[in-house]
Length: 77
Image 1 (cartoon, rainbow, N blue to C red):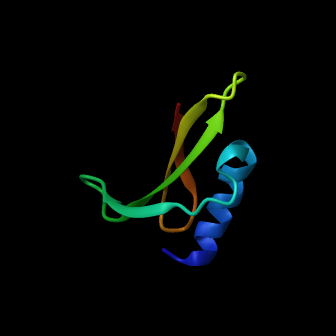
Image 2 (image 1 turned 60 degrees about the vertical axis):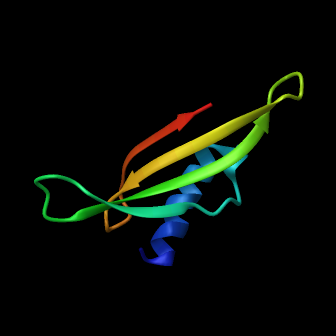
Image 3 (image 1 turned 120 degrees about the vertical axis):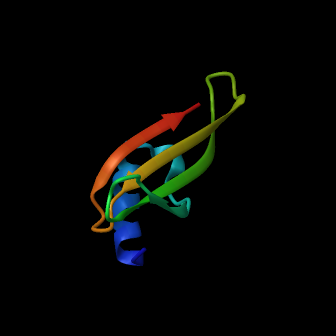
């Protein structure tokens, strides 16, 4: 994936989830059944803290097409 597109996607992720700001994503190519093009899955990992200071792992998963358009964004705690 083009580094400029990764940077563009990352800026949108950082604005929505500031706890992963500055983290570099792991990128995998995903082939959808029946589709003639592949999508990319970008995964951001970080650890935030709750009100008591206990660590909470944060995983943000972004599915984007080859042009950098975000198709889906999800998170888990």
